[in-house]
Image (cartoon, rainbow over all chains, first blue to last red; front, side, top):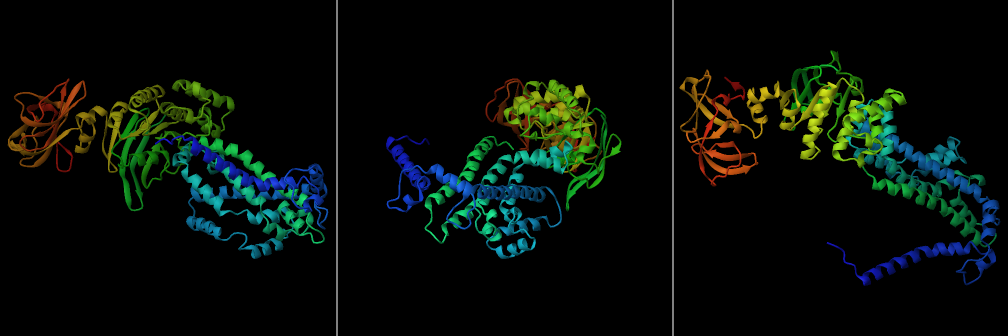
Length: 284
Length: 354
C-alpha cells in the first residue's frame, strides 16, 4: 500500500517537526546567548534573547585563565584535555577489551567458557555506582588517584560491548573462519585480517556511544581526583556553580557548557558518516 | 597432485554415528564426486578431508602421508565452499592473494600467480572489485581462483553450484570439468544433484546413511547398480521398482496377478519376494507389451514425454519415458513393453541379485 500524499498532513507533519526542533534548540540558544554577554548583564531581568558582544572575551577567559571567581580556577584547555584523554581511554579501552573477550568466548573452546561468558554478563548488574566504594579502595591502594589511569581503567570493563561484539561475531558465517583456516590464517591473523574489518562499522557505532559515556562521567572523576589540574570539564561546570563567595557568572558557565558539548557532537558527526556508509554495505 | 586414501573412516558426534567406515582410493588427477541425499554424511566426509572436522576413527592419507592430525592449511588442499565464503571486505585480488600472503610469498610472485589464475578463469577485469559487486557466477569463479592460486595437491568442492540458477549451473559445471582436466588436480566434489554427479565425475561415490553404497564410473552405476538405493538415486527420472515373486525356478518374475517379466539370467531362488527395477527409458509403448497401465498424468518435456501411470492389475506406480511429443486420452489404458537386458533385480536387503 502506498502512503498517500496529502498537503494538509504534510503541513501538519512539518509544523510538528519544526516546533519540536525549536523546543529542543531553545535551551542551547539561550546558553549561546548567555555566553556572549558580560556577567552584569546576566544578572539583570529580563534575560537577553539576542547575542551580545562579549563572545571572544568570555571564550578567552574560560579557555586561558579559567573561572576567575572560584578558588579552583583551572583553564579550560586543561579540563578539555583531561576530559578528552579520559573519554578516549575509556572508549578505546572498552572496545579493545570487549573485542578480545568476545573473540575468546565465540571462537575458542576452553573449560567453563559459558561460565565466563555469564560472569561477564552478570557484571551488567554492577555499574560503577554500585561498586564505587570497593573500586575506590582498589584504585587508592594502587596509587592511581589523581591520574589518567585512575580516571579511565576502572570504567573500561564492559559487559554491554562484549555482548554486542559477541552477537556481531555470531553473524559472521562459519565458512569465513573455515576459509581462513584453509588459507592458513592462525587465530590472531583471523582476528586482525577478517574479524576486525568485518566489525568496523560496529566498532564505529560503539565508539560514538562509549566516547559520549566517557565524556559525561561525573561521579567517578569527582571521587578519584582532588588536584585541580586533573579536573574534567564536566566537573568544572559544577565547581563554577558552587563558588561560594559570589553569584554564579552565568556567561562563563554557559560558555564552558557550550564547549563541553562540542567534542561529543564532533564525534557523532564525524563517525555518523562512517556509520551510515557501513550500514549500506552490509555483506557479511 | 596426489592420491587420497580413505581407510575405514568414521565420524561420530557423541553417541550419534554419522559416517560408518568409509574406505576408498581417489587416484592422482581423478575427479571423484561424492553424491547422496542430504544428511548422508557426504559433507562431513569432505570436511574431514579438509581438516575442518576431526576424524573419530580410521585414516586419511594424502600423497601417502597420514593427515588426520594436520591443520587444514598443512594438508596442502584447497576448498570451494557452497556460499563461496569470500572475504567481503577484500577485493577479488586480495581474496585470491590472501593464502599466498600468509605463506609469505613475495609481492611480485603473488601478483603473477593471481593474474595467471584470473586469466584462466577470465576474471581479470574484476580483480579490483569487492565480492558484493559480482554476480553469483563471478563469485563462484573467484572462489575457484582462490583455490587454484595455491596449486594444492587436491581440490575439495562442497556443493559449489547449488546457489546458482539452472542455466548458470550447467555452464559452470562444464567450466569446472574443463578446468580440472586442464590442471589435472585430484578433486573431490560433493553434491546431492545426480545430474551434476554423472556429468562431472570420473568416478562416483554414492553415500547412503554414512555408508558407501557403490563407488565406480558413472556408466557402471547406471548400468550395474549394486544396490536398490543406487539404482533409484542414479538416473532421472528414477527407476521403476515393482514388488515381484520369483517363479519358474528363477527364470521369471511375476508382477501382480499375471504380468511376467522374463529374466535373461536365472535367479538362484524360487518363490521369493524380490524387487524388479526397470528404468522409464527402457520401457516403450507396444501393442503386445506385458504391462497394462492406466495413465494418471502426462508431462511433456518437448523432446520426450513422461507418462505417470499405475499397473492395471496391481496398482503399483510406473513411469514411462516415450520419445517426442505424444498426447493420450486422460486415464487411457496402454500396453507397455520392456527391454529384457535392462531388468535389475534386488533382494530384500536391497542388494543386487543375478
